[in-house]
Image (cartoon, rainbow, N blue to C red; front, top):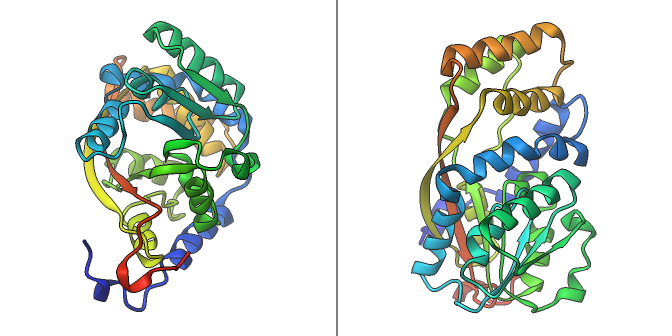
Length: 290
């Protein structure tokens, strides 16, 4: 547990909002649902690495600490290609995936069929358009990863996650590990423009604690593997948010990837924090805070 004295004088929600606003000011356009359809194949390949290592590691952390009962009903916010649908559905009663992108939904269905999983359903909407009051207390676990940085109104969306669960909530947030490749490629394409920050931990922990929750944390390490072309597609979509994709930009991406991985698969090592909490539990000194 973090000493509350370490939090004094810091407004963690404002810090989150400032980070969101800084990214937004840099963007020439916002992310669109079609971007995630375009990225469906590369994202699926990444999440499937080492037999769904990322999702399996998250499940193991939650299961070890009693945060997910064996007959659980799970809601995944922003499921992508089935990040948690596949590894979780093998062990729980049902997983509901909230996912708006048609390409991602196709990958969920394809990956589920290959894994022999059929105890899942899809809500084809963005999370903000889901009527959480209609799902109140329906799930034993509400979980999300990746999409959390898209929510400027972070506490409002967290409260909506809490509304639909009678058990735990979980946010899996990235830990910035200073990837040298990304930093060098950004500088080559964008020059001296500061790179956007997407790291979610420890800010997500601190804002939960600030608002009276009692979050638990475990750190996981995992590998992501993509083909050259899928990695190229990922970077092309990413940079299209911040600059015009010219032949020179495409060449810079291809050249950097080739120097990094040759013709073989592109392998990345990542670290994330699995943060979970019981919405019914509040710090004693802050009982009643929303």
